[in-house]
Figure 1 (cartoon, rainbow, N blue to C red):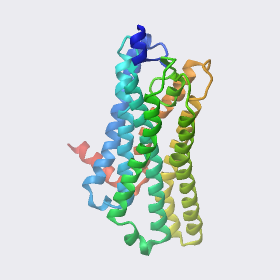
Figure 2 (figure 1 turned 90 degrees about the horizontal axis):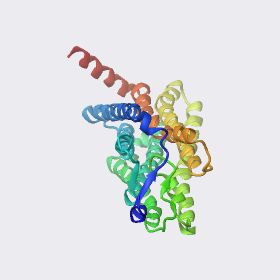
Figure 3 (figure 1 turned 135 degrees about the vertical axis):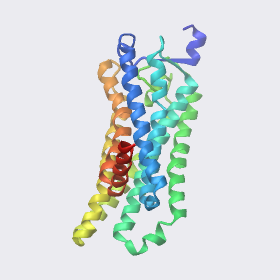
Figure 4 (figure 1 turned 30 degrees about the vertical axis):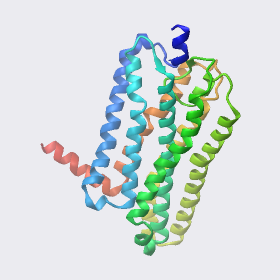
Length: 308
């Protein structure tokens, strides 16, 4: 690319032998993307059509799965295009937009998990007050906050990055995440400080809230009857598994942005794929199998499909 294009376009240098394995890569990613869309959409569809699933807990689950679909759609179509392209490039403005959507939806995941934790806390620890506290308006406000607050947080460093001067035009990755900071001539103190604030607000504080909430739930459940303990285990365990899964992937993302440039490309690629392959498939699997009411409707749907 000439100098003029270098100012605008970024080369994605995270692929391993893409010219040799492009069709294998394409087939794998395309199959995974279809599975993500179908599995998440199926659970959301079941929650929408069945009135007994129109409860706050299931509404938050539907929002979380919808978040997974958007999260994957932000990444997978571009990956599929790159596999079939001679050059893996992206417009810098599009790269910043992908960065914005990626971290906005990641932050929304933690906020939605926090809302689920609060819902379970009220349901188990304050059952008589549950209908009063978890009203429709409350659920709607929590959903709006879960999507708007992270977007506003991430928009600030995204706008700052869009206006930053670039000295490097090769991104060591397959999509635009924290690695875009390595493209800038000088990473501003403002971006660094605001990045720490965003990490605190969008990840650490929600995680601390979730841990505190579930600790309270388990303490109260332990002191209560067997029925309460069973309810806590059935409804809280899936949320905790999803939290552990996504938190692990967040650690991967932070690590990728800070590993040395001589870090093996294959290992870097494998680490990056962790964030886009497993988690969007893990969520519907957990909620489809572990949530009793969803599992029941899912079995009915599959049985009716076999009959047809």
